[in-house]
Length: 179
Image (cartoon, rainbow, N blue to C red):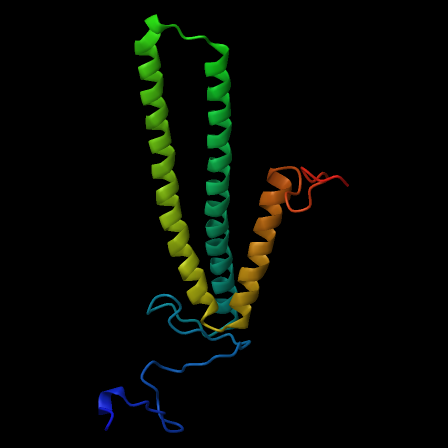
């Protein structure tokens, strides 16, 4: 059975341009980048590469900041849940205050919906930025990859150590352990 021409694997001849441009699968230390994320983002000088690295660092910082914001919102929501449950246990609401109870439950549902909507929008933005960071890495420019790795490490350090004033990776006490 003959394979149709449109399904055959075609190996481009040497020195002939490929259909998708110059495809490479190795990292290259170069000051030239063509069409990074958008058609007109092209750099071909050391100053341009430095500016592009600064832009990628800011872009990566925004991505990490959104991740941190989502984490902070989950912590905030858990604190509010704990306060609300403590508050409802402290007050003995009588049957006469049923309107107050229904009002509290509806405002609690509205707050949950608000948090969920904010988390959904932030998740969409984070996912989009994450794919764009992946595409920047797929440019196979080593300077851009180093910029992303260093910026991510600095953001992780800033978030985990400076903002929380303690490291969440290596706890001093492991809950439930007998050590």
